[in-house]
Image: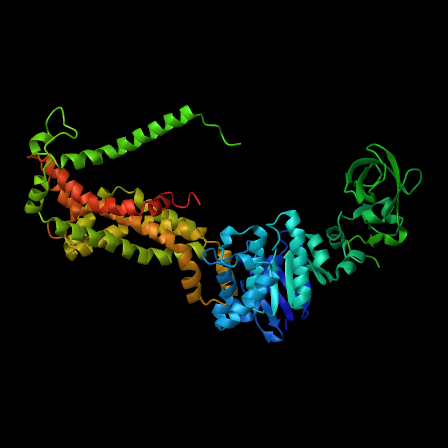
Length: 334
Length: 276
């Protein structure tokens, strides 16, 4: 079981309130991603749940039991750190065994769990090595192994893939998702990378300055961002925004349209502009279109094979049913 | 790209490095050689290098005139005692400053280091008078106390630097893994800190062993360590170069041997956290 409830939790460092009163419920078995720009309080929130930081006020409950004043070890949670935080003087086997040793698990049971974790994480051949002799991806797998063997109520991941190179990151992302499907244990995952959030989460919690901006499934956030911040943060490339005349036509202070919801034409359309930089990804091409009369450069997603060149004139038409409207406070107009 | 170094440059640098190394070692070598000469040969001009009548006479004389082993024992007690006492105080201090720093931690560290900037002679009279009044003059206890205080800032600084290198996340991981504070210290912190503590211990034993200002000024005969033993042969009226050299050789030999066997630890200690 791993249902975690935060009730009016706040965190203050001296006079600075980094987490204003915050309520959140994480259901058993859910994969929840905390996402937001750096300094938004997502890591602090995770550390509050872990017990590595004390809450300033409010209550944390794990499976209905008050956990606010429990030390980290008593909460039944396992954490995977950005820096892996392996014990450098212990072999991989001893690293993985450490939490079981602390819990007094019998030796045979320890061995059984180590073997099964090592097999699941492709670490069997490395059990007698030291962390210093492993690559970044292997180290991260050891850290995950150390978390798995505890059979925790929930896993906490603090930006676990930030130190890996891009290719490895995609691989590990899949491994963690698969692990979640297999174990069906609650996972809380902190990242600043919205792609990781979109691809892995059952539920995304978007944070800004300690506030929860929106909670929802990836597609809910993509389709119905509650405000300008979420609209701009979720989705890659970023949503295009326009205000002034273009927005008032739709009775809004600001409108937003995603790059993939704009139709490109060579001869007619709503906005006329000049093609600037084109980013060819093979499957898609992202055009940056200038001089459209809108305040910002418009990013457009087109087919990989579109034959537009730098300086060409193009016409852009937003798909009417995909236009997001926001009022003067930046909130979504339904 | 690695910088290309020509063979000639390499040879040049090797020769230069050996020359500097030998120049630094030369006084010690000369002391050792002189200790095997007669007094007459020791002051002969031009001095003889290796071809002289080797004799052990100085060593026997020195041992007859003064009790080497008593001084040796005093040195051992004073240097080890002050180092262990210092570590006992410094480990918790450095620990708390490295892992639970407060607003003033940096200032406290600077303040401790600043005590090393005062010339010791500036506090000689007050300390001498205090020692006289409380009866610590010419006692090993007194020297252990004074050397502990003298070297404490360095011990704290070194340990602080080592502890700082231990990433806080590893300690947090241990806490998440269910380790109590005791287990965290035994299974995680100590194994990671041992090399640092060992280097600090070694370096400090050497510093305390060679410390001469306080040991000379605060002792007479009873508790005098090897530094005082050497000094007793540099009397203003006599030319006892050979005996002085024999005494010096006997005084530095133990620490030289210790240093030789712990070179690796020492280099780590001396570069203190500069190189990982």
